[in-house]
Length: 124
Image (tube, rainbow, N blue to C red):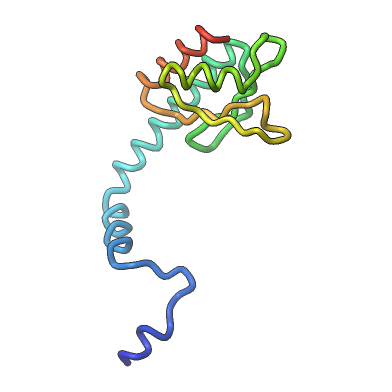
């Protein structure tokens, strides 16, 4: 039997540490669900605050928003990205077709998101 343990493995084999972490996370699913709910609520709040500023984003089921930075505002997504970075706020900008006018903004804590919104007010 011992040789079979190393010769046959599941295609998604994980080590003992990953198995222990997965087991622990299943035991604490209620705590994780609270965190997921908080992220969803914060994502909705940030999305609404961005929309009020004329910065739209499609609905999201993730922990981030893909926010369009209108060129008509005088600042492209790349320049807003750089200005935010200079303020210590890091978002993602992709120099690729269909994404150049957008920023990927991860949802943080309410305080982090408020800092992001304030920084956006200063640069857009």
